[in-house]
Image 1 (cartoon, one colour):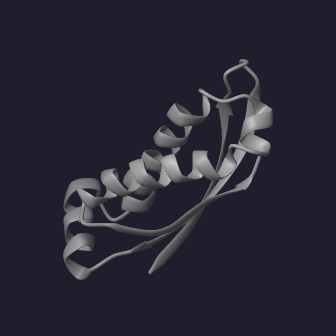
Image 2 (cartoon, rainbow, N blue to C red):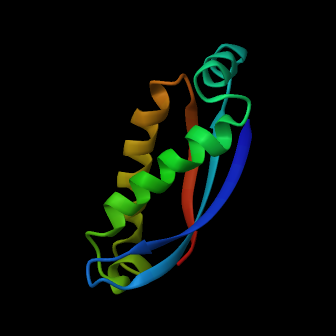
Image 3 (cartoon, rainbow, N blue to C red):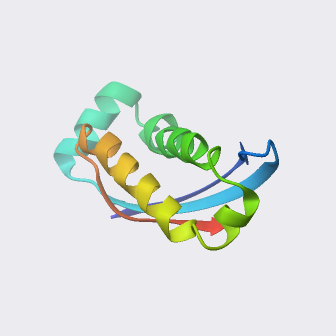
Length: 104
């Protein structure tokens, strides 16, 4: 499997800018690596995996307040992000095995 971490800025529902950290684990087969390298180059992690999860996280978190992100809605938010990232990665033959928000 391959793991990656990414940190970036998002804007929440109240227009606050928050630093978000994400950790994800993915399974890659030889076939999926070949497909990714063909479509995104050898730097497919920076050209596809990370930008995809960042886009999905930004899209989802802009619907929540800081309190919801920090506290009681976090499991629901993470599940939405996991579901959408899984769907996006499936098209490239990438299996998402774990994803969670590490920092807010």
